[in-house]
Image (cartoon, rainbow, N blue to C red; front, side, top):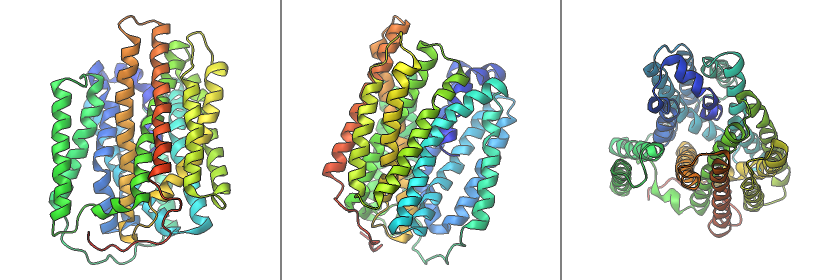
Length: 451
């Protein structure tokens, strides 16, 4: 559900803009409002889940998400829809770390853990591709309102299943006073970082608006790190987590994976619609092989995970995805779905399916149970920040390649460059897996002692 809502509105934006009277600038906030609150609040959401119980916070997050989706479908003015999308992001920021922390705690090791993270990764990645399909079909045949309403039954079903199927939270551990200052600094810094990056679609990277925003974000995040090192309260995130090479390496890998994947989805969708002239609904259907490929790759990852080290799957899957992205970069202006999209989509999706489960497992390996939510929030945050940075940076590069003369050929050249750069990012992720992540992740939780 969370992954679907990252992409489900994209194909409905033109109709949303016409129906509610959005300005061209205002329309971008239908996407940005969700990304901003989701990315900015993930660390805080993970900490809240650790403090108040993973099941409890999951249920609250699902309720907020479902109600926000319902409100968004009934929006009558631009501000109503933007506020609903922001509320969806808030719900996602608390439920996503809580859900992943529950998986980590329920399946601490062994075959069940490999299978659980394989299923989770397949749903997470396939959701993004299915969001394009769902958004295209609903926009064309039911109306833009349904790109919001579609999350209501998903939230209701998930809420019922979680209420009945997840064990009650254990009694809360006695903790020190909460680090309110750290929470404010981290949330403000992350939010400004995402804000500065996503606004580069209007403000150049060298503009004072972008540079000023990113500078303030950097100062706030530096102050957050200093606060976490010196605070006498219960820190938002224990910096000792980053001395765990599994946690540090997996988050770096995940950041680059998020950057490459978000940019590739964006460029492939534009290529199909703008260059090849494919309709929104048909574009969504043509993303189905990608979704199926991720699921198949995840199943293979589960099978191999019983015999092959997780790092090996990260490297193998990463190399396959790198080849797929590079193949995507060969698109042509007079091409077709069969000639230019289907083959690379299959290769790329299989590679992603192979590595998505292992990166989650590695990122939570050796983490104390009391920090599962924090580690999960950090992992989700690295993916979200990577997606924002990658889309903005590669989008700028693609626009530069396209130039002032916009034709199918120049647009194709820009999109092709963006997809090729996605391959470069994934190649860098493979190098991180080889050099930073240990050959075998820690099997037992580390102690939660203060740094």
